[in-house]
Amino acid sequence: MYFPTSSILIEFLILAIIDREDSYGYEISQTIKLAANIKESTLYPILKKLEKAGYMTTYSQEYQGRKRKYYSITQEGKEQLQFLNEEWLTYKETLDGILEGRLRHDKD
Image 1 (tube, rainbow, N blue to C red):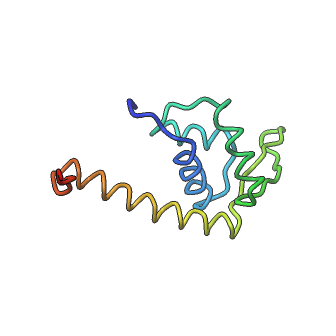
Image 2: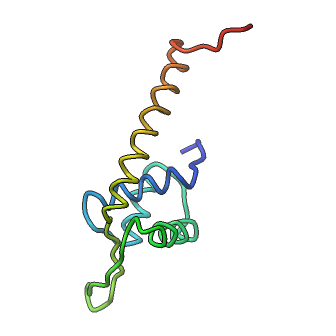
């Protein structure tokens, strides 16, 4: 995708992904890559930040003989997701209004 993606949008996407079901880092990164060209070196600090903020927790689970770190959303994470979703809808509505010519800044 051509448009840059902010870290807050990546946080929003991560919370949305793990709200549907617990997931591990690589799977999260592959889903986010559908909309944003990010590297794992960008993703993992954001995952740590969300965990430190209390928006998600982690647990390990074995998969094909190796341990995988899974991320799970917390109640605080669900509340943050709701807040970010409301902000996103307002932002999207504003962008759509500008692109469709419904919104204009009147010259003074």
